[in-house]
Image 1 (tube, helix red, strand yellow):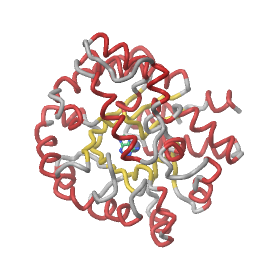
Image 2 (cartoon, helix red, strand yellow):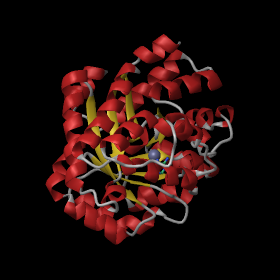
Image 3 (cartoon, protein in one colour):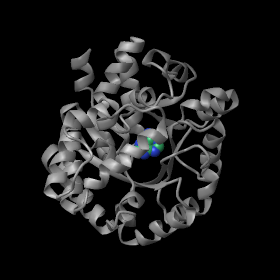
Image 4 (cartoon, protein in one colour):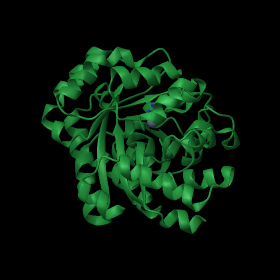
Length: 324
Ligand code: ADE
Ligand code: ZN
């Protein structure tokens, strides 16, 4: 089954590129930039990756990215991930990135965009992969700041495939960002949002009704609201589910408790993704394998999940035809 899943052409729709920073690269970039890390070794970094919840993870995630300073750093970060994903049989990667997490450290948007965009072109040329860019707003910061970031990204609107909403979910409902997402819509930029990871089903409804998103990132808590599940099925909304992330952040206790089988039984359109692979114990292939081990799914089920990801991806019709 491992060989089959490795060879299956997979698209990844939910990845935070800053969450793909492996401890080895963290140390290499710290040295290149003359930064002292609060860890003695790569092993010490890995040992620190035990989280009680999303906020506990986010603290380490924002700290880890302090080594990213130059366009070259962002390029190397993304290429490092694209190569690993390519080895796992991933043919298309959509990467969220968090401009505000860099702006607050004095790293300009131009630096981030230059590095990530160069990596996108390299991935296409060297690895034959397609990629997309999702500019995410940090929901635990103000909507005014998010609007400023969207406006200041004007030179890059053409290069941004979607805007997203991430960071600490509880207490930061999608309704807070209505104007920002309306503006993105006016600009013709598609929209996605994290909802129903730690937050209640109501946040999924708000993301659909108020932010007009085309996909929900996570969304697993929809099961607490049967009417919402019916709506998600009827409207064929795609959920980008991240099973190993949900275990690591204690959204569920063990893979065996993960609601993926119920979500599938409910007829929802699902995809399997890694979220923050450096922190959560593996990439896309590891997430597929964890599902196989926990649920003993058939090849057909995995073909269906991989097919849904390609259908729901931000990619050209020509590329989609190529992959189907
Ligand atoms: N940013 C990085 N990973 C995230 C996650 N799993 N949920 C919300 N925000 C994030
Ligand atoms: Zn995420």
